[in-house]
Length: 277
Image 1 (cartoon, one colour):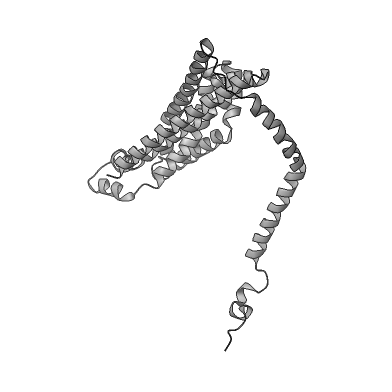
Image 2 (cartoon, rainbow, N blue to C red):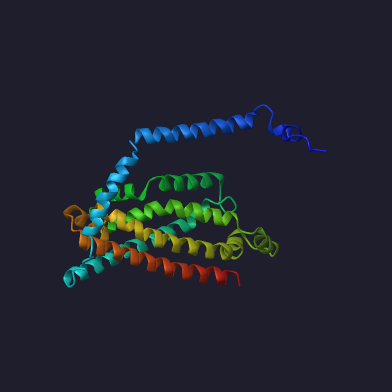
């Protein structure tokens, strides 16, 4: 005896569109319409991409072989690269230190008052909503060109991100450790110090290391607009079409980021490994 058709076995899947299905269908159609509108509005063209690939090939040929410019030029590249790493390191470190108390104020289980909680969260949202490139443009106009503006841009952009990540880590901390300290008569500060902080500190350190690696790339970008570091050299070489030195600087940036990524990954694994023992 054959089984009944699918429509009879699962009538709920073949019935009329319910409100949930209508909303999902409307959402899918809206996204498809937005995608098509974007293609038309932005003048997307496969032909232009294909034509541009030949030009890209010509530029790659002009970049070979990379020219390190031995002597004072090579030393200037290394100094600028070190400046970029220093911008990323100082900006990330200061942002993490400032966001550390902000994270506790923005977490539901450690904030001192509802008003403080809302103010801390909205402050993080405001700082995070402004891109680092915009912060760099603002600080360049305030303090002038140079690495100091780059450090301030990273600080402002990362405080909001760190505050949100830190508060989320604090909110997901296990309550059992806090309850154990409460049972021994510990006050609120001791509950945070001995119950929550040991749980979330490895996570925070891991996030800081990841942001340091990411900010090294970002410091290169904001350097192009005048915030110091290797980005200023990149901008000058692109403007003057010095493609062979440009190729070497790009390789130098890639190697630096790869090295920092490798070291950060080892440190993160060491921190997480110690926290689990």
